[in-house]
Image (cartoon, rainbow, N blue to C red):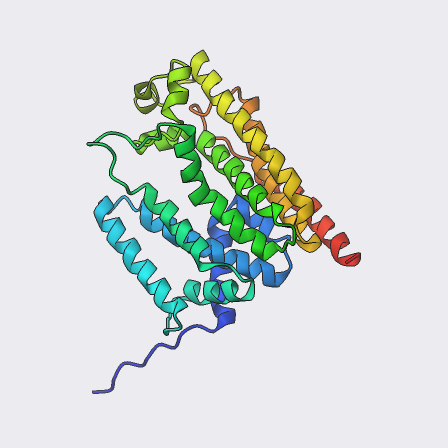
Length: 308
């Protein structure tokens, strides 16, 4: 009987191509900024995104119990660590990320933290209650792991010399994640999750039950609008760090970061213009607006290369 042929691992070019296709299909806001990067940096960012996407998908797969998802994530992470140790792998994402971490001197500890962030949502809630965060300090830790760590990886790909860039990248990630949290309040509540800190709810006389159990599309009360406005202001404060970060990034990477910051900050502004009604519809930026921002970013990239 003829043995089945052994599948060869993808080449590095093929691995990066697969990561680019994942990013293009899934990244939405992120992908518009990736396009404004030089190809080697774009490949690396797409590889990191594909790694992050896989971890998120495993953590969020509600067809499995939390315990089963943890087992799947642990097995996947073991495969990644084996690949990092130089063992053979056919996983194109592992191949691309391993190359990117070596090429751009990305500490593997940052990727461990990124995966740790995805597993926070798998921690069992008290009893059968909802997933919540008591204080903003608790929420900050979550935001750091799922968003700031991404920023700390990205700036190594973007390139920087000034060590101040690291704290600014951390705080830029907080701004992005708070924007995501505001946008997804209704969707998260359907999944029995409330990321708005409980002490903020109490300060605004908003009950946890009001967020978790409401008729679909019910607009926010005055107290809920005030709560959401305060969270938005906190995010707005962190966007100042994003503006301070831009000039510290390598010139040829600044347009990409500018595109990303402009899109995310624009989403926060849209939520404000809707008077913080994140329940009637999910805030999003139309594609034509993103393409307009990308066009400006590509123009900036052209001039950055011209005068490099």
